[in-house]
Image 1 (tube, rainbow, N blue to C red):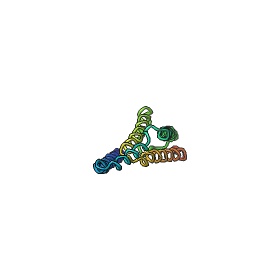
Image 2: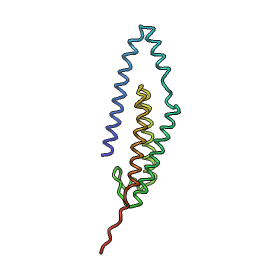
Image 3: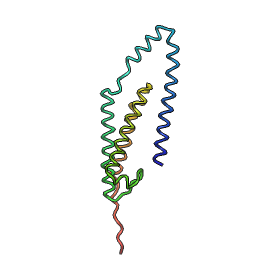
Image 4: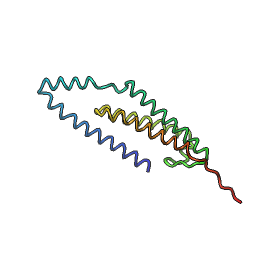
Length: 155
């Protein structure tokens, strides 16, 4: 189930990038004959921000912090006897594998932001991090709010 959702999300990002590339090719062809339009397009591209600007740096740090919080909250939840619902318990109990998955999630988020930046979707580039921070933090808060599972005792 988890792999299917990840593949669906990846397919969506790739298709969105392909549509953006096609949409950008058409205006480039139209502006070649008009010097004013070419100058306007150069000005607009000069106003674009660099990918590794200060705001993205803080957003990516926030994604990393949210994933770290999710990591520790999930381990705390498992120590209190609760069951993991998104991954298997064996994966979460293998701390190195689980940390790698959390780090990979941060990398995928940065990669998706880069794809949006590359194809000119700068609002989506920023919102990828905002949504990721919100979802990871909400999951961590939920993990900490769960009650400890008490083992059933036999009479």
